[in-house]
Image (cartoon, rainbow, N blue to C red; front, side, top):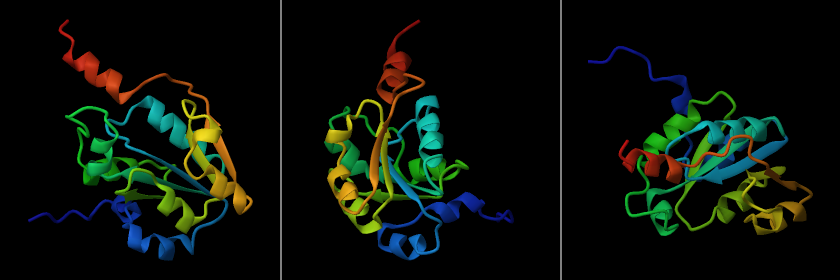
Length: 164
């Protein structure tokens, strides 16, 4: 029997149907970003910290396992299941909450949450970021943050496969 309390970060994991109730109490501006966040690396945590610096709250929406598979990143992806990916991201101090989406894009989460700032990494030009038009429509802004650390989960997986 486990007598230890559930880690506090677990409370940051929010189902899509409960996110609006949670958002009501959060300070604004609200920053929103999304991605797979499969094998968390320095590039991910740097981007998340920089995103949080653009507002008072940071909501991260993760692709469901099925959504990751549809992205064509490889048959073995995701490496980590959604529940595990959400827990790791939720454990970061800069993250206010983590939710998920099963669709191919996070547009439904973006529209329902109405973030003040929408963020993606530097490999996404603003005009290609899903939700940018909608966010601009309610007076928000979209930011593509240049990479400080060029890392990728795909490159990490390839490195693990390469014999030394």
